[in-house]
Length: 343
Image 1: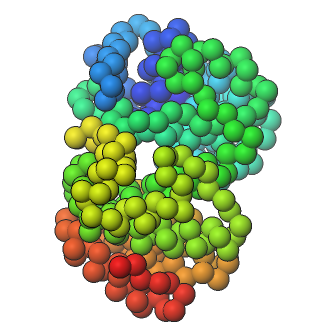
Image 2 (image 1 turned 135 degrees about the vertical axis):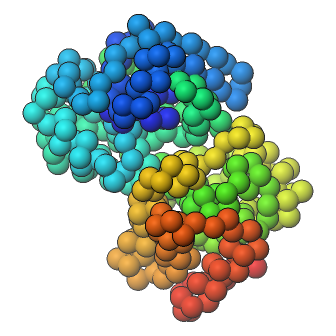
Image 3 (image 1 turned 120 degrees about the vertical axis):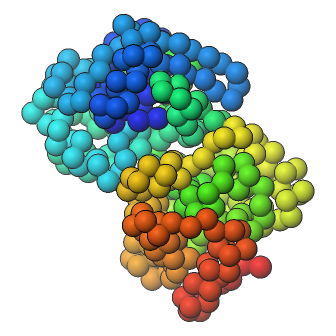
């Protein structure tokens, strides 16, 4: 069962169905009607194309058949985790494996408190998916699925391998989650830019904005003794420095970072465009909360939260790289001596 069948859920669940799994998508009626009529068309930036007929999967707006599921993938936005777990409670069988494939830190803990009789594991989706047309979902960046390792996953490893989504298993997923959060600090910058990811990342001023947010996050992690995993060719401690170099050099040093579909945007940009609540609280908010706990100022991440909240309330504007950089630098200056300003 895929609970929260949006772009990520449709893509992952669709590939699993194509690999032979019996999949039920639980989500919004509009999207379910699309795939019931059109089937699923899954593509990626490497040229792969999969078509899954409607007869190959089931759809539902409520998890009424959760008792039939051996594996539940939770792909709702972080703010809906508790509601999703409550919807599953009383329907799901004890011992069922529940895999949280969500952004942010701690979603598995929220779900585990409610689904205490289940095996709830954290996971991370390391790629971006966009909805190109009704029923058509496209992976626009590189990456795979990272999960907290557990013996119960042994029954599913072959299925994920056949689906082309091998599970990257980790004894402790928290360093991976924090590393992914560092990368996702680009999401609010991308959403405020109004540009596709590749175009935004090709602008040095936008990259400097991301570097400001990442430098704060790294300072907070150091104080909290959190060591983010290395997910890219560059170690996390060097990412902010590389983001600030001139664009011609950035293209040489981070060519794989720019190996992005020209139309790909962040999920936060999609949420703003659709009038949905974003996951800013579970991205920049995690940095701000940990900064408050450890005594490290985080004015840049606080300002990004404010700007996204304003956009959520209908005050959206498209910031140029220079405008946003000036705004965040001013926030850093107001934040006091604890936050150094990047050049």
